[in-house]
View 1 (cartoon, one colour):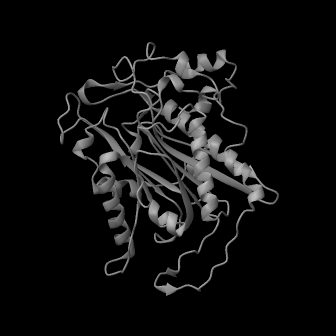
View 2 (cartoon, rainbow, N blue to C red; view 1 turned 180 degrees about the horizontal axis):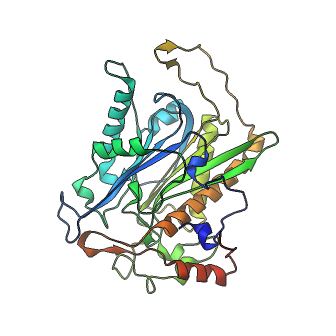
View 3 (cartoon, rainbow, N blue to C red; view 1 turned 45 degrees about the horizontal axis):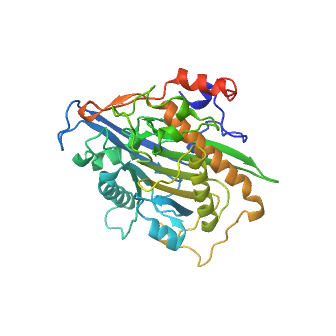
Length: 373
């Protein structure tokens, strides 16, 4: 189930064929989802409600680099590899999304996967991008249950096409705005004077305060309060606790600083829903562009020319991409909420999904239900 299945349409721009991150050609997404055990927390044993999501950013050789840029709205979180992206403007690895205490293992596994792809004896280096949000309300996060084989499995099943959302992969144990959430995605298509470009967004949503939740401008969090749908068995939610990771991709020919500008606009999409980058939130965004290829200086042991020709979108035409990022980010978070299902985790704590009937009733009352897809 997705937002548009309920008649909730975000923004004005058209979507890609799948309304998904993978509408940007060549991108693949894979999940490994870990759900094991019930009852009281026993560190190292469970219950387990976690996983890992991997993004393969292009269909070329594993070492091929793409232009990229990042933005931090609030830094109470982690996304590895950003120092090199800031220095070089290049994304050089797949991207991993997981829980806070499993970043190291996912980082290790992506390096090993790169080594295997390069072949034994190859002289290679790898600085993977791995981002996190904290799932410890539901998951035995200190048990560090994500292992290398789970990362390898996610890479093995990574594919284009529809992207599973909600309680999957890195989003398995996540919640947002006091409801169960997780992975969400959306896309937009922007028509230029000569070409059209696709923008895709994938989020791991684990942020926001219930009372601030707005969907398409409607104060859903005020209408569906904790007195209607409980929050983790507690009467009052911790305001603003949690984090959100947003990955933006486009096939437009952008330079690194332009990618950074797109990553900044993802934070506006999050803000449209009432999030504010609170003190305890880690709100980290990365954007990459596939519109320029062949940027790697060496390929298959053969030196490439000392210079490379690139194309760039004129900044006078970039605003439409900004709007696309904002719309797709908001809809990706809504899709994470709509797709998620109620989950009970450690110590019997339950994160409730947003009830679809209540959501559609509120949206309809405010005149924002536009017809079911």
